[in-house]
Length: 96
Length: 174
Image 1 (cartoon, rainbow over the protein chains, first blue to last red):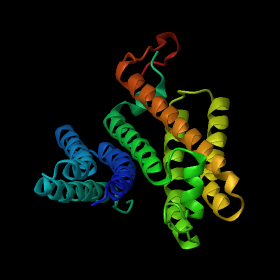
Image 2 (tube, one colour):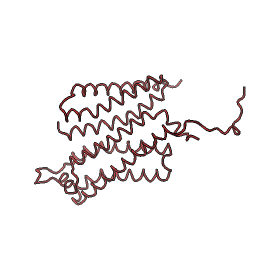
Image 3 (cartoon, chains in turn red, yellow):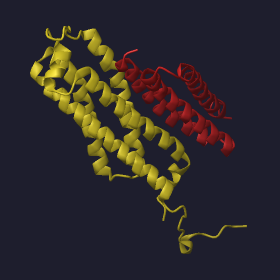
Image 4 (cartoon, rainbow over the protein chains, first blue to last red):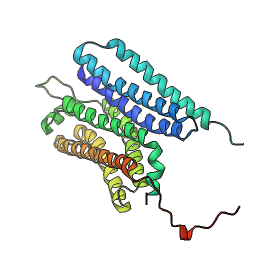
């Protein structure tokens, strides 16, 4: 895959990761989940998203790490979905 | 006394760090893509938009230009809006400077997006405008990042105690 294509992907992913982490992460922090779960969820999402952005570049540069790259992508999507789910469960209720 | 805005942002500093890091990645990948695809001189940019016989490249089509412009028209204002709101809320900058920075940021973004169309359809000499607006936009992104870092710094290292003037407080009724 050409470098320009991988960089375009990294550019797009970093935009979505930054905006989603800030918005969904803020909602998770504002929820009344236990501090450990909140911190763990946000830290894991951040690490997975960083791996999702940087691993494709590493794969193109070295030719190794395809499995890790695929795993990071699935993990990143799953963790963002978990953040969204927490936000929905905590704030999606109709006011009483 | 701790600023109430900084105190309010303190629980959110982990996501602010994440946002700052991805802002850095966005700026870095944008600069790398610009250099790789468009080049670093006005002549390179002109060749990219209007095609070049020497490089066997065709002029950019309107569809191709719109495919790049439309996502940027949504994404860049969102990032600018978030960043400027954060730093304005936390009073990292004074209000007048924030307003002027917001105006400048949106003008540079609009100029940078419009410049591609201008080079293709108005005049090749406007490739300078594309180069200058992109450099200005990268400089502004670096400045926004600096403001976010300053904000994060303040949430970590501002003293976490509130000074309360007890002479003005009313006693609680039992």
